[in-house]
Image 1 (cartoon, rainbow, N blue to C red):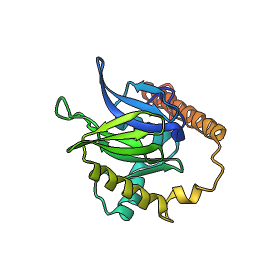
Image 2: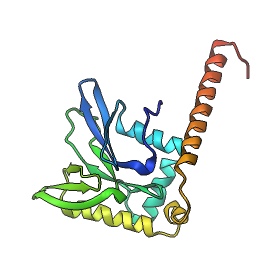
Image 3: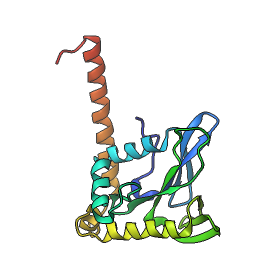
Length: 197
C-alpha cells in the first residue's frame, strides 16, 4: 500500500475512521494541528505505519494483553512517542464499517464529559475528538496506556532515553518502501514468466 505521505509516527495525534463521498477513509490529526484525509480504511493505515517501522501489530497486541489483561481494544505501543489507544468514534452506517479510532496517549490534553454517555477528548493540537464512550471508559483506557508505558518489558521504556532521530526514520521508511517496490516488481516478473526463481 502507498504511504500517502503519512507524517512521522511521533507526529500523529489521532487516527479516526471517516466517511467520504468516495467511501471509507481515515481522518488523521497531526500534533501540529493538521487534518489529513487518507483514502484508505483505518486498519490499512495502521498496518502501513507498522510495516514502515518493521513492527508486528499482532506481537504488540499480545504484549499489551499481558500487561493489561484485555482481550480486545489493547493499547498499541508503536514507538516511544506513539502509544495508540482505541476509542469508539462513530456509529456504523452499514454492517462491517469500522467504528474504532485510535488516539495517541501522548497527545491527550484533557477528557471531558459531553453528556452522560459520550466524551470529548481534547488533544494537545487543539483538536477535539468526540467519543461514543463514557468518560469512565476513556479514563480506563488511559490507565491501560499507563500500564503499558510503565512496563519494563515494552519497547517504549527501552527506547525512551534513546535519541529518536526523525531523519534516520525518514531514511528507514524510504528503504522499506524501496524494498517493497523491488519485491512487487520481482513478483510481477515471476508471474509473467520474464524472471525465474
